[in-house]
Image (cartoon, rainbow, N blue to C red; front, side, top):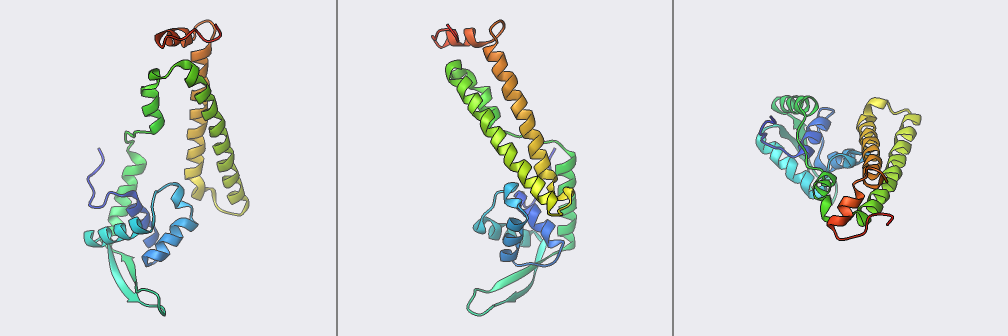
Length: 203
């Protein structure tokens, strides 16, 4: 079971992780997150990042190191990781990697209620989803291949490889589900269509 943490936003985990490299101010953290493509894995914006930094400071996981001003720009406070923050980072990562957690994907919610739509609508929707999955997969594959060709070690692309594996599994599921609906001998289409007062597919 997941622990109740003082700061539970996953953006906090990223902040703690990058502060292991060196002390940074929030603007530099934001730029580092974007430059490393973390926006693809962790949702954040300027406001949410500053809020998380403040929460981490209150929790004692990071501490102000210095405040400086560059010309007319607003003051920037540099934060450093504390010993407590380093322990929290490692403990949190161990939990995320080692303990599966039940999640609530939107597609699963849609599948759980899919009977409310007739198969005449569901079949083209699933086919369109399959096409979009293929497009997304191609985009991620290119991203990974380009990064590897540029010399980035594969370790730093492992989350993209995981996304590819999930897309492969989803594409296979969608194809199988389409077959279960449309199979002319044992498909669910006729029964499903009858429930909605529609003719059987192909009738």
